[in-house]
Length: 71
Image (cartoon, rainbow, N blue to C red; front, side, top):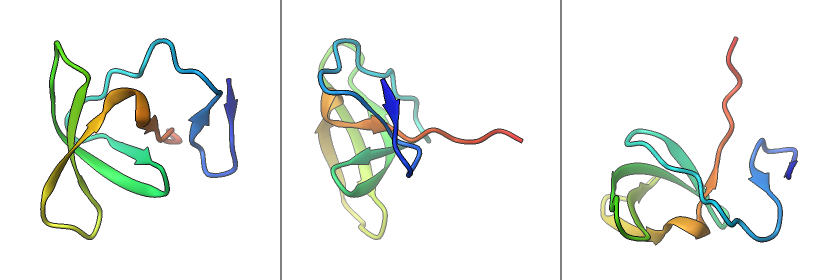
């Protein structure tokens, strides 16, 4: 697995998608998503794109974790 310049993890196939927690930021294509709810038994994650007002649903495998630097 590689980490690109924008601290987003990527690496082709994602066999074990990240378990997103409410309040985390994720990357969907070129968009930043704030996670507001998750479907525990299903593939859906609900989030709000930054700059938007409506909640959208995203497939868990299509989202990428944004790595945060802890100092």
